[in-house]
Length: 79
Image (cartoon, rainbow, N blue to C red):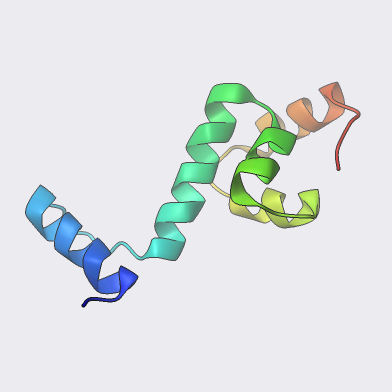
């Protein structure tokens, strides 16, 4: 049996990805891309299973700060 990290490396190797990708980096990238698509940090929070929106905003690290600020200002129902 393999660990999730080893499995991730196997998948990347088979896909021809030579860049080092960890599960943690992959989670950050997914969060950023989901946010880019929906502009709803609260939805990303729910998908990631975070209690705090503050935690989620740290995951959305590849999105420009202006995009994040705009989305946060347009919503008032952050959990």
